[in-house]
Length: 89
Image (cartoon, rainbow, N blue to C red; front, side, top):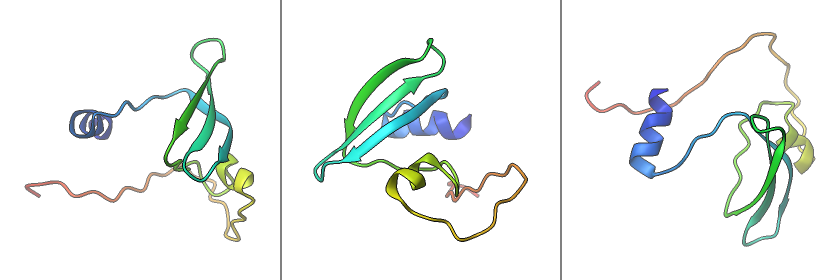
């Protein structure tokens, strides 16, 4: 929660949960992204963004859509990796 609140406060971004990317396409100057809201009966939305960042794992939709293969192994565990700088620590 503290990461979400800090992102919203410092960078004025909205972090949402329950949103799935169903398709994206790079047009060079922007990325066309189709989103599905799993919280609202599957409502869809189309956004155009300068970048898309896939943080959905080694065998992810993002990697499959870009035809990128991950030669490593899968872990049968849930884990979180974060690189942060916290002032005062």
